[in-house]
Length: 345
Image 1 (tube, helix red, strand yellow):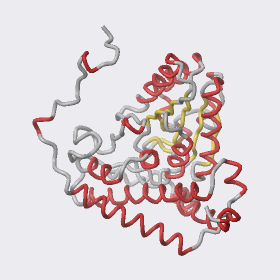
Image 2 (cartoon, rainbow, N blue to C red):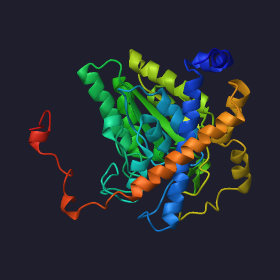
Image 3 (spheres, rainbow, N blue to C red):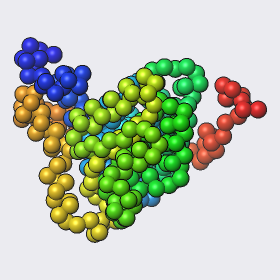
């Protein structure tokens, strides 16, 4: 970082252990996240994406902020609103586009839903549709870290606010709390569980208040503020790996599109969309950068141009990816005892 950039570094960034380059990478990741999903919409309308299509528009700050707080050795189970987690952990956009279109070079090689993606080499486990079924899986990762004596590893478990009504949320959080496991539970609260508003989903002011019943901390943060999310998740991780147990962090956002492309979100009041349009996480962070770290219009334009170029090239590469060979349909579906480190029998 140059002397001029150092002098422009924000006290807020220093307080969080970040520098200007970290902040710009956060911004770039948020732009890539939104750009990937915007191009996904186009691919869907062109008939190139099988099934329906889901995005996390409005959730970019929550996803990128949380992923930035993860360490390389951590594991997590992000969901369909958390594309920014995959981007931040390092998955290449062209492989995401390949996944969208069911191509052989997608993370699941064309064998799973278009947003059911993850790369285990990056410490991520792919989701399934039954939410929050992945939450106990993340707790299992945390339990494995404990059993192996791996002191500085943490598991991150994502769910939506609607999913907190299910039994697997209770079972996962309860086990992690009782065993004092190194786990952080992240609730992406976009205020509607499909078309059911929060006040018909649970009888507390905030979903994070449910943590009190398990004897662990629960906090709510502004999910449109990437630095606030990062700060909360970083603190929760530090607490978890220091032996103080799990926490629940609720990121309050709004789903700025319908549940999926087939849903026009008519049930969300226009005033609510207008309110959150003013808090668009990408534009909000852009404004913060300009006000706090001497981020210029020219610098912003250079980043946006590089992101557009990246995504254009990624889409071309993905479209050149072949369709999966039907002969490989059963490969990778079952593990043999020889493939397991410790066969269960």
